[in-house]
Image (cartoon, rainbow, N blue to C red; front, side, top):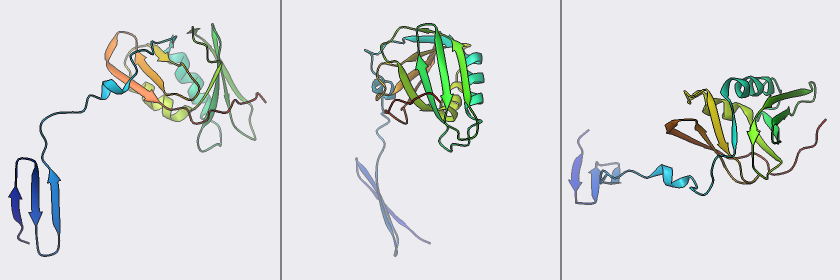
Amino acid sequence: KEAKIYYTNKNIFFYTDQITVISVRSEEKYVDYKAAFPAEWPSNLKLDKAGLMLALEKCQLSTDELFTTSIGLNEKVLEFDADDPYLNIHAAIPAEYSGSTDQIVVNSAKLAIMLKQIESQEIELAIHDRNKPIVITGVNETGYKGMLMPISSAPKTKK
């Protein structure tokens, strides 16, 4: 069908007999997404990507559709426990954690997807509160920064 096009400095209009579309013109300015990451949240957890991926894959054996995984944060070891009525899913990996939060609950599948985008074999996370996002980066990989929101703020109890 035929369409009439009108434009101004700020908008573009497409008009037909049955539909009108009004759009804001791009000013070639892009959102600074990195500004969403809190600068005052330094990384406080460093660990091996391969070990973390193995622990997350084990947690994804859960029949829970949210892959709810509780991560106990200790100075030298991360303890992973996944919700499942049939299996006792537990994994532990060495880590260097210096934060004050003792536990966080995440979707292990979503965290694994984010980690697959990082080329670095050493991962850094910023975990400062069980109710705030986790900032994920690769060591010496300035081109990638991810953010994952915890799926639950309630502390989980071990089975």
